[in-house]
Each structure stands twice: as C-alpha cells, then as structure tokens.
Length: 339
Figure 1 (tube, rainbow, N blue to C red):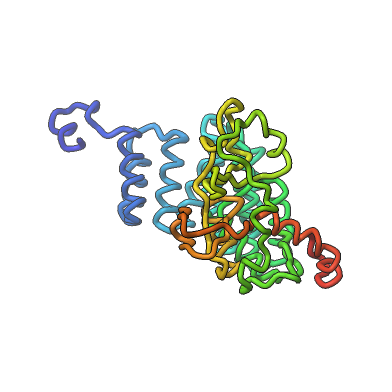
Figure 2 (cartoon, rainbow, N blue to C red):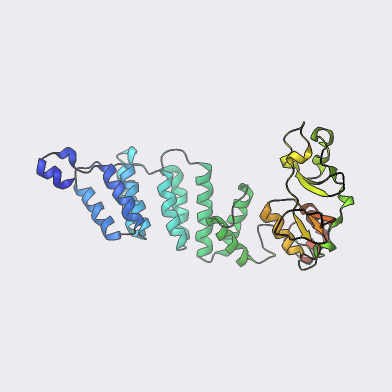
C-alpha cells in the first residue's frame, strides 16, 4: 500500500487507522514485540488520525506481547491527551486489560488504583460483568501478593454478589487458591460438613428403600400430581410391573397436560456397592438430583435394565438432610463454618 501510494502519488492508498489496528492485533497475537513497536512508531509519525480505538489496539498489542511498560506508556499518553480531547477517554475494556496484567504479577496497589480510577476516568457505561471482573482481578492480585486475608474478604464479597462461576474460569481458579490457603475453618465458601458420613461407604448404607421414595406411575398426567413436585425436586417413575422407567425433575415439569414419562430422564443406576463419593460425583456431573440403587448394573451406562431391580434411591436431598441433621455438631466441631 505504501509503495503503490508513493509510486502513483496517491495518498488515498496509504494505510489508515483500520489497517494499522488490524496489523497490531495480528502482531500482538503472534507476540512479535519488535514489529508492534515498529508499527506504533510508524503510526505516530504518519498522518493517520489516532483515535481511541487505535490507542486501545496499541495497548492491547503490547499486553499480548507481555510488555506492561509499553502498554502503560500508551495508557499514560491517552490519559494526558484526553484532558484536551474527551473523545480519547479510554473505555473500561482498557482498564480491565491492564488490570489483568498487573493482577497476574501480584501488583495489588496498581490494580486497586486502576479499579478506583476506572469509574471517574473511563467513558461509557460500566457493565455489571465489568464491575465483577474488577473485584475478581483485585482478589487475584491480592492472592498473588500473598495477601490471603484481603483475598478472602474479596472472595466473600464476590460470592455474595455472584450467582455462580465455573471452577475452570479465571476467577474459579483464583477462588480455589484462596480456599486452599485459607484452610477449611476460614473458608468463605461455607462448605458443608458431614461428620456422620464417610465417602468411602457404599451408597446402600445411606439410600432410602425404593418404596419409601413413593414412586409415581409413568402414565400419570402432571396436572394430577403437580403438588408432589413442590416438595420433591426429583421423583422416580414406575411402569405397571414396578420397574423404574425414569426420573422426573421438578424443573423439567413444564407441560401440565402431559404424562410424566414424557418429561422424565432415563434413570441413573448404580450398584449398591458403589461408594458414596462416586455417586455424588455422578449426580454433579450429570446434573441430576437422584440415582436408583440396584443389585447389578453399570453406573456409567445410565440405563435401567430388567435384570437390575430397584433396591432404593439416593438423592442430593438426602445429602442436604444429613447436613441439616448434623448442623449443631458441625458448629461445635468446626467454629466459623456455616451449614
């Protein structure tokens, strides 16, 4: 583009801001710091009008190359020029990008200062997710700076304001580190304690007999038994021969005029000798509330066979009841932990 513009004496062929920012993104992704520096110098010495988007692309490219100093230089230049040109005021995205870099190296003070300045100095609205990430990055900076108490307080605030997060996410991995360093009694995530339950015990020891689970007929219409699901989050279904043919979860009950079997999930079956730990893992992995305990079968098949007669059921509700029943013991034995 430059060669043809020079040859034809046509300035319209010269690269513009979009061309340069596209180059910066590619060079940043390939972590080519030398070329990023070269493009930045060229942009500043050209006639290209450098706007907020172009400045942000420069900073992002430096960060992608691991050059925090380079990104800070660009950031300082934006803030300085924004005093005369409000259109150059950075968006929250740039603050968060720089905060991520400082959080990784444990520079708590810098992350805190950037978080404080993001509200008055940035332009545009700050979304709820951006606010949450700012708190999460502050916690990450604290734990990477060995400020465990500070990180624990921040995690408690994050847990109270966030519905859920994945343990595999950035905040989840940081939270896991905070949990590990905090110890069980100081955990801000309020773990459940089951002093009367051993995870290595067979599930048969904690199940309830199948009849006591009060299974429903598979051909019943939801409208006729809807009240049952206000109390129980999962109910087993049986056919005319007493075989378990499905599990209905209350959250799946969406059609009042339909038979229960149409909303049921295939029953998860486990042998009676399966350890409680494996059963809990299975329930969490499959996002189910209940398993059917049988004499024979394979817990990984998830299907019910005629050779596997139902002995009982085990559910997360049973586990919750164990927590409630041992709450007093828990509070006495483990101060500071909550049920």
